[in-house]
Image (cartoon, rainbow, N blue to C red):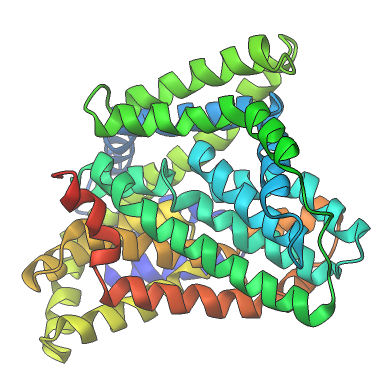
Length: 425
């Protein structure tokens, strides 16, 4: 059955089938070929996987992000970032990264961050004579911070797949997300200095204060959501509902840019995006069930342990594998399939599952900016109509910085674990 599972999945992916279709169809083909498992098992497994209270947070965070984007929050975050650092060399590129970090604390999604910030910042950079490759690559790379700085949809998926605390994962992702953002800003600054991209005139204290005042409602939202989770006031799922209400109230009654006529479109778009993620999770769960029945996780665990008993060597191997997987598989599907496989191995090696969760998510997030799947690359190119090749051409330096930070996070677990330990999680 193992050959049938992976062979049919690989063929479907090569043929261009959506990842959810490939996973579900490969599961059905393998079950039909075996003749010993009822086909209804696939439907039952898919329903069980989707019937999860923590996963309800995914559609609500998507709705919250869409409400805040339409309600003018993304523009105000950009204005604040521009007032703070827009005067530096390559100021607009730095603003792109910083604004993406701000929006990451709202959306939980990499592609949503690229779309929300990039629709404003990519044209602005090109008007200032930044090269198209640099502008597109800066935004595409900045977008994947959206799944590392909490709240994060892949962290929710990892928590469901492994039983790890989602609140603790959110806490562990904060410093790595900030570190990645700073590294991208350093790269953008150095490239801008080399190419002569100048910043705007330095903002006065009054301008900074005005931008901060205008963006305060946007900045308060992550504090309410994350503070509520860490303080035990509400669960991540309840926090997602609070985010929706907050985004609706701020967009309609504070900034007054969100109109009642906008709500149906926001709900429809969010429902489509959420259903795609949930379908991937459901079919990946059915696929994972077959892998477990074939004892593939145990075989992989034994193989990895046989190579080396060193946690460092193990993590290097896992990083290489996850980076490769991230280039062709959607993040949530990869987590649902691979996290249960690696969990027994990393536990046996004494590696904290929370630390490993951050490593896994950062690896797969990097896959958002690597071809051929590279969803952030497609979103960025779609904003301008440029080819994927142009985005990739400007992306290699950012990719190198991302991998350097990944290695640092891998071998210095204190970076991701300091906040959970300080706050007693």
